[in-house]
Image (cartoon, rainbow, N blue to C red; front, side):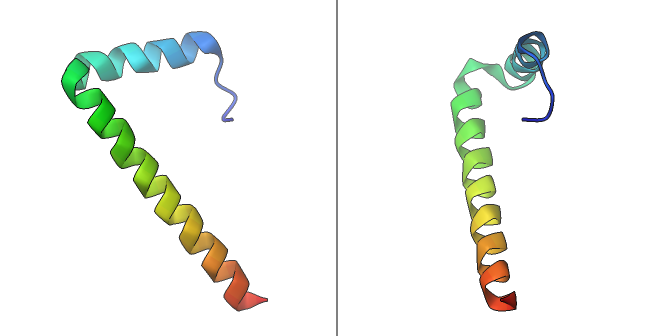
Length: 51
């Protein structure tokens, strides 16, 4: 990963929970996951075109 330990991840999760609230957190996670998926797909397509 990014060299983050369990303690750091818990702090990040707690801050996100305070900022966005418990109801919006799953929605936010799905949005970030979709963005990462689209980014990876774009990278893969770009690599295939360059080969």
